[in-house]
Amino acid sequence: MELAKRLPLRVISVDSACVYRGLDIGTAKPGPEERRIAPHCLVDLCSPHERYSAARFAEDARREIARAGELGQVPVLVGGTMLYFRALERGLADLPGANAALRKAIQARAGREGWPALYEELRQLDPAAAERISSNDGARIERALEVLRLTGRTISELWSDAPAAAPRSYLKFALIPEDRSAWRRRIEERFDDMMNRGWLEEAGALHKLKLDPGLPAARVAGYRQLLEHLDGEFSLDEARARGIRATRALGRRQLTWLRAEEGIVRLVAENPECAVRVENEIHAHWRIRNRRATPGEDCK
Image (cartoon, rainbow, N blue to C red; front, side):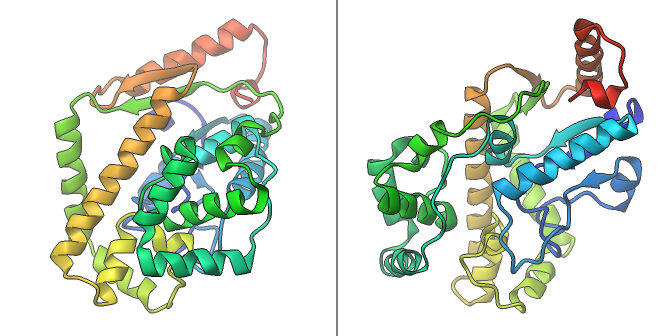
């Protein structure tokens, strides 16, 4: 928001949950005032009954980046879905399509044994993929096992074989929490604040849609646990505890991705001068490239 007051931004959301309509409070989706200051693209694109993909994101994001160039805006991609960043920057692997019979068999096993058991199997077969997937992320565990059965190769191997995306110059920044204990407390406080603002009621509206539990919208951290509570699987207190654990696990995976990312500027999240630092880096980038262009064109 601070950077939007300094530069003509076009904010492009890189969040696999914010694309779904009706998932507002629990995704920390930007509100009307935030969107007034800095309009956000790729938010509220889909029904919760749909499946949005990394391939679709990469196509949509490229379109919005090009639009920013046409309007003389700085395209800023913001969010925590790291696979989407990879799809945009590095291209996508040639993965097989979904196999309904195989997915049904994997889901049946998960029903009997639980997703953590299938995750352990994945960890043995494809540790590189398991490192980037939560032990409770059924959709991604299912996909990784499905690809392995269909191709005989691990999904991490196929990721590494992905064709390179079209060359593009990105400035990359990561907000890293300096105090991990405070970071964990903030996640808990944030969860409770969302509950106080009506998150359970929002999850109730989603529950009425009778979503397939395997759909991405039903598996978002926090929503999944609240939906399971509404299904009568456990108490609200237990849903809260599980939701906080799931959110922390998501954060740890994001930090793991960021530690492995090359060419990234790491910013201390608690530093109030982050926006100034980013603005200075953008201006330096323009000077180094040493050509006249509008900000949006140059940030391509």
